[in-house]
Length: 323
Ligand SMILES: *[C@@H]1O[C@H](CO)[C@@H](O)[C@H](O)[C@H]1NC(C)=O
Ligand SMILES: *[C@@H]1O[C@H](CO)[C@@H](O)[C@H](O)[C@H]1NC(C)=O
Ligand SMILES: *[C@@H]1O[C@H](CO)[C@@H](O)[C@H](O)[C@H]1NC(C)=O
Ligand SMILES: *[C@@H]1O[C@H](CO)[C@@H](O)[C@H](O)[C@H]1NC(C)=O
Ligand SMILES: *[C@@H]1O[C@H](CO)[C@@H](O)[C@H](O)[C@H]1NC(C)=O
Image 1 (spheres, rainbow, N blue to C red):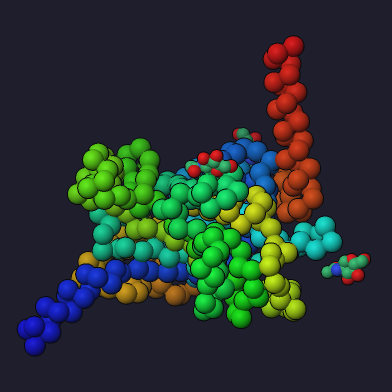
Image 2: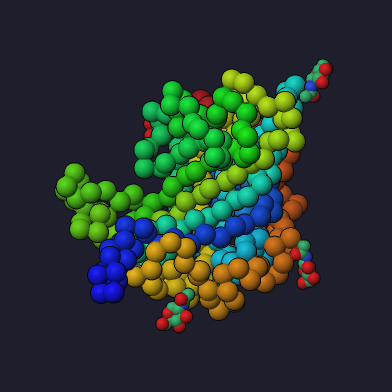
């Protein structure tokens, strides 16, 4: 019996604890409060989680006042990604994911909860090839459950029809400074001399690592499937420009509960003040909606015009400066 317990404790150390919550899309919109605060000139994004998000959002408290489309009632985070489009005959049709899952991984290694007001970006919006993507971001596009093509880039769309879902993965930073809210990916101190035993840069601590896992069902949209490059495009361009944004909105008590049980492994239910992990959004996930509906757009063509207008204005300002 004794050796059995020792063995399972050791095994638990190998299988890291995680939690996951699913969240519904509540809007398409051409904003990005992290990258382009105050402006309606971003490429189109698909938004999930707290609907309090606007061009101006900077704090967790703002998000916690919203209606969240996330199934864990304690999670008021807002998550967003570039919208995926089906492009046929020059027309862009936005695709709503079948499922968006926010995983929080490596809970056993976390030293501090995800801080309030913490925000993070993962991926490279300008990437046009695999080499442009930081390996730590773990960007992948693949057919769920199907054998993958060894000759394909991880971040390329699969070149054959998926038997079930098209899936994409993206990993966020797992080190954060709770005072400055700066963040980084963990690295081994054997190779990164200014990193500590916790695998973080000095002044940073391990936090639960956020991973996006998004599944798209293309079977009705593309009944004949595809061979070669699929007729898909992200709002930012090819599959390589995959990126994600996150503003933390977890209630502080629930964020702390992610660190509760260091002996556990596998799935950990994160309960909190507003209910159990699977109780559902307190306002009803389907009630989440754009809280700034009279500005910006959810229309692809209009978003492209608004982006062009913005770069034209920038060009004119530059020109005037030189004139
Ligand atoms: C964002 O902030 C600006 C400047 O304070 C303000 O004019 C605007 O109404 C705000 N927009 C929203 C949606 O809160
Ligand atoms: C694209 O346009 C062609 C010619 O007008 C038409 O035959 C075809 O059905 C269209 N395809 C889609 C997917 O709309
Ligand atoms: C992002 O991609 C661009 C290519 O457009 C590349 O020049 C840049 O170095 C990449 N950034 C990172 C951090 O890899
Ligand atoms: C976390 O620990 C506290 C104190 O032991 C306990 O009251 C709470 O139920 C725990 N939460 C979870 C999600 O296990
Ligand atoms: C929206 O909220 C109402 C009242 O709070 C609730 O009865 C309804 O089920 C919610 N709708 C959805 C789609 O969640």
